[in-house]
Length: 386
Image (tube, rainbow, N blue to C red; front, side, top):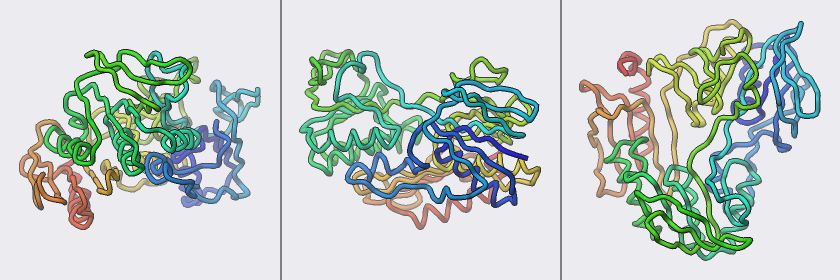
C-alpha cells in the first residue's frame, strides 16, 4: 500500500505523522508547491514579523516518506495502482490512496497588481516581505479587520508604525464572535492607537511604481508606505477542476474526509467537510481543523476507528492580549460573562443555548477558558443540537 499527499503544509505534514502513529509502514509521497520544508503558519502574522524564528513543523527524515518540494500538482489521474496526480514538470505520482491538502491562497483586490508595496500574507516569503516593509514604513494601511489583519496591526503598533485598518463590515469580527464580543476585540485597536475605519471599502490604490496612498469609497485618502490585504483566502482547487471531484468552495467530503471519488480524501483549508455538529458542509481555515482532519483521514485510510472530533478552537494574540475561542456558536446563542466584563482587563464569556454552554470566549484567562472548553468537549449532545 502507498499513499500520495498533495500539500506539504500543516494538514499534509500531520497526516504523515498520524499515519505512522496508526501503524502504517508503507510508502508515502508528499508533494508541496513551496521549496521550504513544512512550517507552522500562525507565527507569520505575530512573532515572525519581528525576526526569523524556527517554525519548522518537525522532522521530515522518515526513510519511508519521499518529499517532492517546489512542485505543483496540475491534475488528477487514475492509474492501475490507484488515484494519482500529474505535476507541473510532467511527473506522475500515484498510490492506493490520495490525500488532497493543497490549502488556500490569500485573496487580493483589483488594482493591487503592478504596484510595489502591496502585500498579502500566506507564506513564509510573504511574511519576510511584510517584515521588511514594516522596518522602513511610517504608515501602513491594512485591508480587512479579521484575525490576520488584527494581528498584523498589533505587530505594526509594537514597531511604532502608524496603522489604519479598513473594514467593509460595520461590525468587525461579529461573524466570528457575535456583535458584543466582536466589538470588544475591535475596541482593542483604538485602545492601542490603531485607527479602525468600518463600513467602507477600497476604491483604488495610488502610486507610480510603489503604492503611496489608498482612496476609500467615501473619498477619504489614506497615506500608505505599505498596504497589507487580509480579506480571507481562496481554497486551492482549480488545478483539479477537470476531475470528477465535487468542488464547491473546496473539495466536498463526508465527515470522514472522503471525497466523491473512492480512495481520494481532502483535508485542511482546501476541504469542505460534512460536520455532524452543524448538519451541513463547512470549510474551516483554523489550525485545529487541519490537525483534526488529518487524524480522521489517517484513521479512515487505515480502516481504524477515529477519535472524537473536537469542537472548533482558535486563538489570537493582539496587543499583548491572548484571545481564545472554542465551540460552535449560532447567532441566536445567549452570551453570559462568567468572569469579568468588557471593561475589565481579562474576561470570560459563555455562549449558551437552552441554558447549556456550547462555546466559550476569553481574553487573558487561559485557566478558566480551558476548564469550560473541556466541559463543552464532554457535552457532544449539546453540540449536536446545532
